[in-house]
Image 1 (cartoon, rainbow, N blue to C red):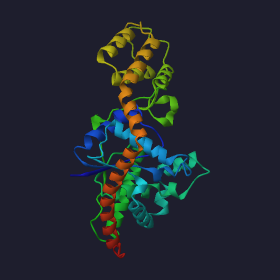
Image 2: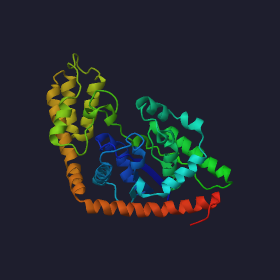
Image 3: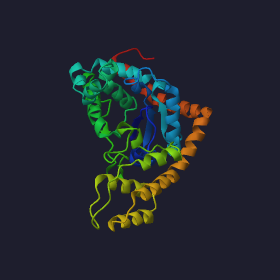
Image 4: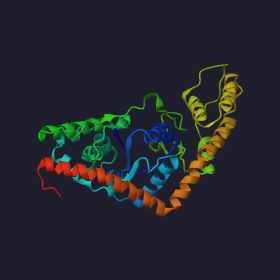
Length: 331
Protein backbone atom coordinates (compact mmCIF):
# COMPACT_ATOMS: atom_id res chain seq x y z
CA UNK A 1 0.00 0.00 0.00
CA UNK A 2 1.45 3.37 -1.03
CA UNK A 3 2.21 5.96 1.63
CA UNK A 4 0.61 9.41 1.34
CA UNK A 5 1.54 12.38 3.54
CA UNK A 6 -0.12 15.75 4.05
CA UNK A 7 0.58 18.59 6.47
CA UNK A 8 -1.72 21.08 8.17
CA UNK A 9 -0.46 24.34 9.68
CA UNK A 10 -2.04 25.25 13.05
CA UNK A 11 -2.58 28.87 12.05
CA UNK A 12 -6.08 28.80 10.59
CA UNK A 13 -9.42 27.06 10.99
CA UNK A 14 -11.08 24.75 8.50
CA UNK A 15 -13.38 26.49 6.03
CA UNK A 16 -15.75 25.24 3.34
CA UNK A 17 -13.02 25.60 0.73
CA UNK A 18 -10.82 23.17 2.69
CA UNK A 19 -13.67 20.74 3.17
CA UNK A 20 -14.92 20.59 -0.40
CA UNK A 21 -11.36 20.75 -1.72
CA UNK A 22 -8.70 18.41 -0.42
CA UNK A 23 -10.32 17.24 2.82
CA UNK A 24 -13.15 15.21 1.27
CA UNK A 25 -10.50 13.45 -0.80
CA UNK A 26 -8.37 12.84 2.31
CA UNK A 27 -11.34 11.14 3.96
CA UNK A 28 -11.60 8.79 0.97
CA UNK A 29 -7.83 8.29 0.78
CA UNK A 30 -7.55 7.04 4.36
CA UNK A 31 -9.43 3.93 3.26
CA UNK A 32 -7.19 3.30 0.25
CA UNK A 33 -3.66 4.39 1.23
CA UNK A 34 -1.28 4.35 4.18
CA UNK A 35 -1.98 7.97 5.14
CA UNK A 36 -0.07 10.31 7.45
CA UNK A 37 -1.63 13.66 8.35
CA UNK A 38 0.45 15.93 10.55
CA UNK A 39 -0.17 19.28 12.20
CA UNK A 40 2.85 21.38 11.24
CA UNK A 41 3.50 23.30 14.43
CA UNK A 42 7.25 23.55 13.73
CA UNK A 43 6.58 25.11 10.33
CA UNK A 44 4.35 27.73 11.94
CA UNK A 45 7.34 29.14 13.85
CA UNK A 46 8.84 30.50 10.63
CA UNK A 47 6.16 33.19 10.52
CA UNK A 48 4.91 33.12 14.14
CA UNK A 49 8.09 32.68 16.25
CA UNK A 50 6.29 33.47 19.51
CA UNK A 51 2.79 32.00 19.12
CA UNK A 52 0.32 33.05 21.78
CA UNK A 53 -1.47 29.72 22.13
CA UNK A 54 0.29 27.08 20.05
CA UNK A 55 -1.07 24.09 21.99
CA UNK A 56 -4.58 25.50 21.89
CA UNK A 57 -4.34 26.04 18.14
CA UNK A 58 -3.08 22.48 17.64
CA UNK A 59 -5.99 21.05 19.66
CA UNK A 60 -8.47 23.17 17.70
CA UNK A 61 -7.14 21.97 14.35
CA UNK A 62 -7.08 18.37 15.55
CA UNK A 63 -10.69 18.67 16.71
CA UNK A 64 -11.78 20.16 13.40
CA UNK A 65 -10.16 17.45 11.29
CA UNK A 66 -11.66 14.72 13.45
CA UNK A 67 -15.06 16.39 13.17
CA UNK A 68 -14.71 16.53 9.41
CA UNK A 69 -14.09 12.80 9.15
CA UNK A 70 -10.42 11.89 9.54
CA UNK A 71 -10.23 8.63 11.50
CA UNK A 72 -7.24 8.05 13.84
CA UNK A 73 -7.81 4.29 13.55
CA UNK A 74 -7.46 4.37 9.76
CA UNK A 75 -4.87 7.11 9.27
CA UNK A 76 -1.93 8.33 11.31
CA UNK A 77 -2.76 11.82 12.62
CA UNK A 78 0.05 13.40 14.62
CA UNK A 79 1.65 16.64 15.76
CA UNK A 80 4.92 17.39 13.95
CA UNK A 81 6.88 18.34 17.08
CA UNK A 82 5.98 15.02 18.73
CA UNK A 83 8.20 13.19 16.24
CA UNK A 84 11.73 14.30 17.07
CA UNK A 85 13.19 12.13 14.29
CA UNK A 86 11.92 14.73 11.82
CA UNK A 87 14.36 17.24 13.33
CA UNK A 88 17.27 14.84 12.98
CA UNK A 89 16.51 14.16 9.32
CA UNK A 90 16.03 17.92 8.80
CA UNK A 91 19.61 18.41 10.06
CA UNK A 92 21.05 15.78 7.73
CA UNK A 93 19.22 17.23 4.71
CA UNK A 94 20.39 20.75 5.58
CA UNK A 95 23.99 19.54 5.39
CA UNK A 96 23.47 18.72 1.72
CA UNK A 97 21.23 21.65 0.73
CA UNK A 98 22.95 24.57 -0.97
CA UNK A 99 22.44 28.25 -0.21
CA UNK A 100 21.80 29.22 -3.82
CA UNK A 101 18.99 26.73 -4.38
CA UNK A 102 17.32 27.69 -1.10
CA UNK A 103 17.52 31.42 -1.86
CA UNK A 104 15.95 30.86 -5.29
CA UNK A 105 12.85 29.30 -3.76
CA UNK A 106 9.82 31.39 -4.75
CA UNK A 107 8.12 31.09 -1.36
CA UNK A 108 11.28 32.34 0.39
CA UNK A 109 11.37 35.41 -1.86
CA UNK A 110 7.68 36.04 -1.16
CA UNK A 111 8.11 35.70 2.60
CA UNK A 112 11.07 38.08 2.86
CA UNK A 113 8.95 40.69 1.09
CA UNK A 114 6.04 40.05 3.46
CA UNK A 115 8.09 39.97 6.68
CA UNK A 116 11.36 41.87 6.09
CA UNK A 117 11.93 42.17 9.85
CA UNK A 118 11.80 38.39 10.34
CA UNK A 119 13.96 36.77 7.66
CA UNK A 120 15.05 33.80 9.75
CA UNK A 121 16.97 30.64 8.95
CA UNK A 122 13.75 28.65 9.28
CA UNK A 123 12.30 30.53 6.32
CA UNK A 124 15.39 29.80 4.26
CA UNK A 125 15.41 26.10 5.12
CA UNK A 126 11.63 25.61 4.98
CA UNK A 127 12.04 23.31 1.93
CA UNK A 128 14.39 20.98 3.82
CA UNK A 129 11.99 20.72 6.77
CA UNK A 130 9.17 19.95 4.36
CA UNK A 131 11.42 17.36 2.71
CA UNK A 132 12.14 15.81 6.12
CA UNK A 133 8.38 15.59 6.81
CA UNK A 134 7.89 13.68 3.57
CA UNK A 135 11.01 11.52 3.51
CA UNK A 136 10.80 10.48 7.17
CA UNK A 137 7.94 8.18 6.11
CA UNK A 138 9.36 7.59 2.62
CA UNK A 139 6.07 8.87 1.21
CA UNK A 140 5.36 8.17 -2.45
CA UNK A 141 2.57 10.71 -2.89
CA UNK A 142 2.01 14.18 -1.46
CA UNK A 143 -1.16 16.25 -2.03
CA UNK A 144 0.12 19.78 -2.71
CA UNK A 145 -1.25 23.01 -4.07
CA UNK A 146 0.40 25.10 -6.77
CA UNK A 147 2.29 27.11 -4.14
CA UNK A 148 3.97 23.94 -2.83
CA UNK A 149 4.96 22.29 -6.11
CA UNK A 150 8.44 23.84 -6.06
CA UNK A 151 9.00 22.51 -2.52
CA UNK A 152 8.04 19.03 -3.67
CA UNK A 153 10.48 19.30 -6.58
CA UNK A 154 13.18 20.28 -4.09
CA UNK A 155 12.27 17.26 -1.95
CA UNK A 156 12.91 15.05 -4.96
CA UNK A 157 16.24 16.84 -5.46
CA UNK A 158 17.27 16.22 -1.84
CA UNK A 159 16.16 12.57 -2.00
CA UNK A 160 18.10 11.89 -5.19
CA UNK A 161 21.14 13.78 -3.88
CA UNK A 162 21.18 11.63 -0.73
CA UNK A 163 20.87 8.45 -2.79
CA UNK A 164 23.64 9.57 -5.14
CA UNK A 165 26.05 10.75 -2.41
CA UNK A 166 25.77 7.55 -0.41
CA UNK A 167 25.37 5.23 -3.43
CA UNK A 168 22.05 3.81 -2.28
CA UNK A 169 18.52 3.60 -3.62
CA UNK A 170 16.84 4.45 -0.34
CA UNK A 171 14.56 7.47 -0.64
CA UNK A 172 11.76 7.38 -3.23
CA UNK A 173 10.98 10.35 -5.48
CA UNK A 174 7.65 11.59 -4.05
CA UNK A 175 5.11 12.67 -6.62
CA UNK A 176 2.28 15.17 -6.37
CA UNK A 177 -1.07 13.59 -5.64
CA UNK A 178 -3.40 15.03 -8.25
CA UNK A 179 -7.06 14.81 -7.34
CA UNK A 180 -8.05 15.84 -10.86
CA UNK A 181 -11.80 16.19 -11.28
CA UNK A 182 -12.32 15.24 -7.62
CA UNK A 183 -10.84 18.54 -6.43
CA UNK A 184 -13.64 21.07 -6.01
CA UNK A 185 -12.66 24.73 -5.79
CA UNK A 186 -14.92 26.86 -3.61
CA UNK A 187 -14.93 30.63 -4.25
CA UNK A 188 -14.74 33.20 -1.51
CA UNK A 189 -17.33 35.78 -0.53
CA UNK A 190 -15.33 38.76 -1.76
CA UNK A 191 -16.31 38.23 -5.38
CA UNK A 192 -13.09 36.80 -6.76
CA UNK A 193 -10.54 34.13 -6.06
CA UNK A 194 -10.85 31.04 -3.88
CA UNK A 195 -12.09 30.86 -0.31
CA UNK A 196 -9.26 31.35 2.16
CA UNK A 197 -8.10 33.28 5.19
CA UNK A 198 -5.37 35.03 3.19
CA UNK A 199 -8.07 36.97 1.32
CA UNK A 200 -9.50 38.44 4.52
CA UNK A 201 -11.51 37.16 7.47
CA UNK A 202 -14.88 37.84 5.82
CA UNK A 203 -13.98 35.83 2.73
CA UNK A 204 -14.34 32.36 4.29
CA UNK A 205 -17.05 30.38 6.06
CA UNK A 206 -15.43 28.26 8.77
CA UNK A 207 -16.82 24.95 10.00
CA UNK A 208 -16.72 26.35 13.53
CA UNK A 209 -18.52 29.63 12.67
CA UNK A 210 -21.63 30.56 14.63
CA UNK A 211 -24.93 31.15 12.77
CA UNK A 212 -24.62 34.87 13.49
CA UNK A 213 -21.12 35.01 11.98
CA UNK A 214 -22.26 33.14 8.86
CA UNK A 215 -25.24 35.44 8.31
CA UNK A 216 -23.06 38.52 8.73
CA UNK A 217 -20.43 37.30 6.27
CA UNK A 218 -22.88 36.13 3.61
CA UNK A 219 -24.96 39.31 3.70
CA UNK A 220 -21.78 41.29 3.02
CA UNK A 221 -20.94 39.18 -0.06
CA UNK A 222 -20.29 41.26 -3.16
CA UNK A 223 -23.09 41.54 -5.75
CA UNK A 224 -24.02 43.85 -8.62
CA UNK A 225 -27.14 45.86 -9.47
CA UNK A 226 -28.83 42.85 -11.07
CA UNK A 227 -29.38 41.52 -14.60
CA UNK A 228 -30.79 43.83 -17.24
CA UNK A 229 -31.48 41.24 -19.96
CA UNK A 230 -33.03 37.76 -19.77
CA UNK A 231 -30.54 34.87 -19.61
CA UNK A 232 -27.53 37.16 -19.58
CA UNK A 233 -24.17 35.79 -18.47
CA UNK A 234 -23.55 36.08 -14.75
CA UNK A 235 -20.57 38.25 -13.69
CA UNK A 236 -17.93 36.55 -11.56
CA UNK A 237 -19.19 37.69 -8.17
CA UNK A 238 -22.72 36.45 -8.94
CA UNK A 239 -21.53 33.15 -10.40
CA UNK A 240 -19.54 32.72 -7.18
CA UNK A 241 -22.73 33.03 -5.11
CA UNK A 242 -24.43 30.40 -7.25
CA UNK A 243 -21.34 28.19 -6.94
CA UNK A 244 -21.56 28.44 -3.15
CA UNK A 245 -25.29 27.70 -3.26
CA UNK A 246 -24.72 24.62 -5.43
CA UNK A 247 -22.34 23.34 -2.73
CA UNK A 248 -24.70 23.62 0.25
CA UNK A 249 -28.29 24.03 -1.02
CA UNK A 250 -30.85 21.68 -2.53
CA UNK A 251 -30.88 21.55 -6.37
CA UNK A 252 -34.43 22.94 -6.48
CA UNK A 253 -33.29 25.96 -4.43
CA UNK A 254 -30.48 26.67 -6.86
CA UNK A 255 -32.87 26.27 -9.80
CA UNK A 256 -35.38 28.64 -8.20
CA UNK A 257 -32.87 31.49 -7.89
CA UNK A 258 -31.35 30.72 -11.29
CA UNK A 259 -34.79 31.09 -12.88
CA UNK A 260 -35.29 34.40 -11.06
CA UNK A 261 -31.92 35.61 -12.34
CA UNK A 262 -32.64 34.60 -15.91
CA UNK A 263 -36.00 36.39 -15.82
CA UNK A 264 -34.44 39.55 -14.26
CA UNK A 265 -36.55 39.14 -11.09
CA UNK A 266 -33.84 38.14 -8.63
CA UNK A 267 -33.42 39.93 -5.32
CA UNK A 268 -29.90 39.31 -4.09
CA UNK A 269 -30.89 40.01 -0.48
CA UNK A 270 -33.34 37.09 -0.58
CA UNK A 271 -30.78 34.85 -2.24
CA UNK A 272 -28.12 35.66 0.35
CA UNK A 273 -30.56 35.07 3.22
CA UNK A 274 -31.35 31.63 1.80
CA UNK A 275 -27.67 30.89 1.19
CA UNK A 276 -26.79 31.85 4.76
CA UNK A 277 -29.47 29.57 6.23
CA UNK A 278 -28.37 26.67 4.01
CA UNK A 279 -24.76 27.21 5.05
CA UNK A 280 -25.78 27.26 8.71
CA UNK A 281 -27.63 23.98 8.27
CA UNK A 282 -24.67 22.44 6.43
CA UNK A 283 -22.07 23.57 8.97
CA UNK A 284 -24.12 22.79 12.12
CA UNK A 285 -23.17 19.07 12.44
CA UNK A 286 -19.48 19.91 12.07
CA UNK A 287 -19.72 22.78 14.53
CA UNK A 288 -21.35 20.59 17.19
CA UNK A 289 -18.73 17.87 16.76
CA UNK A 290 -15.90 20.41 16.94
CA UNK A 291 -17.26 21.78 20.24
CA UNK A 292 -17.53 18.26 21.64
CA UNK A 293 -13.97 17.33 20.64
CA UNK A 294 -12.46 20.61 21.88
CA UNK A 295 -14.10 20.11 25.29
CA UNK A 296 -12.72 16.56 25.55
CA UNK A 297 -9.02 17.26 26.10
CA UNK A 298 -8.35 13.71 27.29
CA UNK A 299 -9.60 12.25 24.03
CA UNK A 300 -7.59 14.72 21.92
CA UNK A 301 -4.47 13.87 23.95
CA UNK A 302 -5.19 10.17 23.35
CA UNK A 303 -5.52 10.72 19.60
CA UNK A 304 -2.31 12.78 19.50
CA UNK A 305 -0.41 10.11 21.45
CA UNK A 306 -1.73 7.31 19.22
CA UNK A 307 -0.65 9.27 16.16
CA UNK A 308 2.75 10.12 17.62
CA UNK A 309 3.42 6.46 18.49
CA UNK A 310 2.48 5.29 14.99
CA UNK A 311 4.44 8.09 13.30
CA UNK A 312 7.53 7.53 15.45
CA UNK A 313 7.54 3.81 14.67
CA UNK A 314 7.88 4.68 10.98
CA UNK A 315 10.27 7.59 11.62
CA UNK A 316 12.60 5.62 13.88
CA UNK A 317 13.10 2.96 11.23
CA UNK A 318 14.00 5.63 8.68
CA UNK A 319 16.46 7.34 11.04
CA UNK A 320 18.12 4.02 11.92
CA UNK A 321 18.58 3.32 8.22
CA UNK A 322 19.83 6.85 7.46
CA UNK A 323 22.33 6.82 10.32
CA UNK A 324 23.68 3.48 9.10
CA UNK A 325 23.91 4.71 5.50
CA UNK A 326 25.76 7.88 6.53
CA UNK A 327 28.07 5.97 8.83
CA UNK A 328 26.95 7.02 12.31
CA UNK A 329 26.79 4.52 15.12
CA UNK A 330 23.41 2.87 15.32
CA UNK A 331 21.25 3.36 18.40
